[in-house]
Picture 1 (cartoon, rainbow, N blue to C red):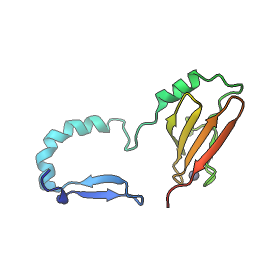
Picture 2: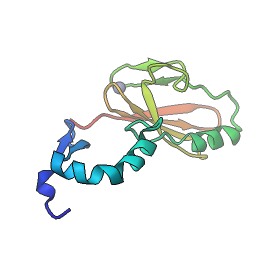
Picture 3: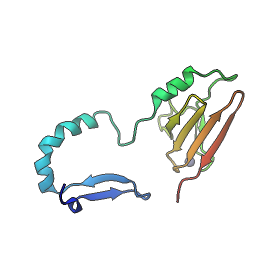
Length: 133
Ligand SMILES: [Zn+2]
């Protein structure tokens, strides 16, 4: 890529790159090379990074607290809530981290807040970080 100024980066309000536009004459040349990789990528993959569901399964497998795990998630920042973040068709929360120490981190899709559920031996605490303006 000797002339990257020909590429147009489309960003969201938080300056995250969403897409790149490639001039037609460049795309024409690289499409035969890129197409197989693109097709493989597009198959069932959304633009968002995958949730760490394997880590979540581990989290559940090692669950030894005195209460049942609750899949309910609530956003203290904007009030979004679900009874079960895994089953909710609107999927209002994305899991971004899970660890065996009892921490689950969710991303609120409505407002962008980060929600941390800390599971202790006999209770859960919820902390959140408001989205950056
Ligand atoms: Zn929210």
